Length: 148
Image (cartoon, helix red, strand yellow):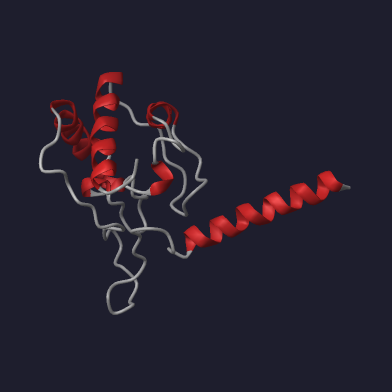
């Protein structure tokens, strides 16, 4: 019986976290404009500060990100309303989504589990080196925005 109660408590906790995220109550997220109107389709979901200088690898990653990832994840990985989540967000901090998670997401796609955007399809045309550079870019943006 205690296992069932534990399972119910875990499910309730996950549902609470999901509701919390769904309502846009998490750090840096915007679900409505300044006048409390819904954001338009494609609008940035997070305010992202860019470091004064990016490493050479992150500069290459920025170019690859802008060519493949930004259509859904937005410029500067800020996310896009109705399209894809911001990668400059505490959910994607290295201790929760390590670098390999990004490699696997590109290779295999991702079933929706943190956000209401639907599944992410696998991405073709990127080498392991490209993805490593993209990860370097995202990590440098994250650090500049206090996500470590």
